[in-house]
Length: 224
Image (cartoon, rainbow, N blue to C red):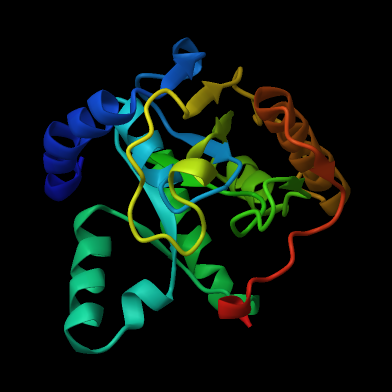
């Protein structure tokens, strides 16, 4: 576990648990060791904070490339922070550049690390659950690791899009873990990957109760 991540678990983690008191279900489905992908819905930037607080192992989150390429003091801060917590850089441009995240994640998963992925590809703009992108399935099949569906609700109230810090609202956040979806022996053709992705999204929807929209989430203005 990266040093700064461990420090955060010991300091910020207890503050989040005591201050916001998130309700957690299905923690028994979280494997103590071995590679695994945590596939979650995405409502708020604070999703990462609370998910990391309740899981007792390192989660390597995918982070947009902007955090690794910024300039000035802010840019230096985020570059150092991303490296210190073991984040994986994701290129939004697509194509070969986007595959760098896979190149970094597959060895980590095979070595027994856990990776957190948001199949929707972005935060939900309206609280609904959107169609998942097949990257989560492709990564799981390539690495031969299970997918743990995760459903998070309430973070959109605690820290809406555009708000800098979580509001002190106790008992609002719910985090539920579903049964692992095994991927060993799964085909990596596009039809099989779409089927697996849809299965993941169905499990997430059962955990959250969100309305499901069978199309990709629209890009926010800052993503254009």
